[in-house]
Image 1 (cartoon, helix red, strand yellow):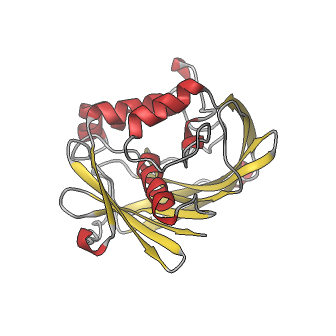
Image 2 (cartoon, helix red, strand yellow; image 1 turned 120 degrees about the horizontal axis):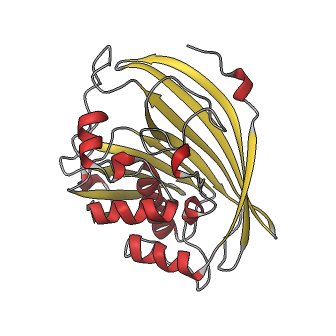
Length: 277
């Protein structure tokens, strides 16, 4: 694979406002599965809806994302997903805040997995308001081979018993839910809304539920059970979640922290998360 060391250290910056419209859209899309917050305080993980990349239509790749080779390296693997990440919350975002997000590429690593070649790109984010840095974050993006090109087989799926968890939110993964979250985050990835593309090109069973949306729900469940937004929240994608089923967001406290999963209708673990005070 090509050496992408030149991309490590690249940065970019974007700004946005926490508007009443965004707050209303977030509540309408994800409620009632949100943590209780005081008036004017943003819910956990709303920052993923701020300052999205806004490429022109002719700058998009075939998957609907901006073509690779600008800020992110031109990884020669076609399928992209969020593998996981970590959010450190230092202070709340508030309605009316002017927000600046600074992104930095920290690492590009190629690996061989059971299903073929993989590339992991690590990007760090700092989200700041006029009061200082509010959120520090690491995002892990994974690129995979084309559907049907894998050299091995995926591992047996992980499963969890929802009865082992103290709280469960049942969330219908409708195409409308996926569309509205894509619209809030200006996410053009076609496998969230274009079913023929998702199934025939990328090889999934149906439309794909956003990893960030699953993490958002888990972080809000953690804040609900802990009684406050956790200082550190870590999440890891385990298996793709597909649409047109009701999935479960499950959580429990563990000591002073939180453990949670998203489970599809068959009980397969799609994301794991933990949170610490």
